[in-house]
Length: 125
Image 1 (cartoon, rainbow, N blue to C red):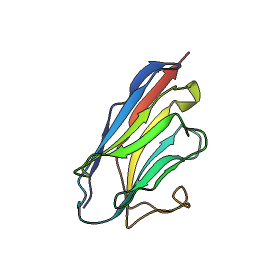
Image 2 (cartoon, rainbow, N blue to C red):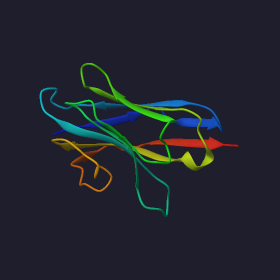
Image 3 (cartoon, helix red, strand yellow):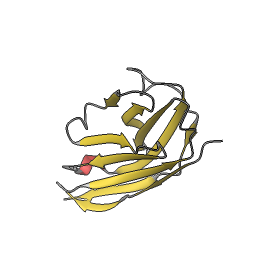
Image 4 (cartoon, one colour):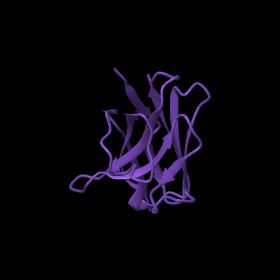
């Protein structure tokens, strides 16, 4: 059973930065698609970024490209989301999600097997 625990959320002003972390109890010798999604109450969940743990591929939503960076540590036990130039529309609950095997261009629409409890990000003007 994979457990995902997010941290690093908080309140920041427009243009600020935050780094989210997700402690992931995954098998470092297996392949996973790890992703960050976000959701605002009353709206559908939105894929933010994803990576394949066994390869170099990373994926981003158009709305965050060039501002956000997804990465993992060398032990593959922690997933990060570095968020720069934050905007008020980035305000949301951010969730770490994991899926066995890999992910491709359809990473926003596939079914994930595990998810965390979320961490709130609030960007104010």
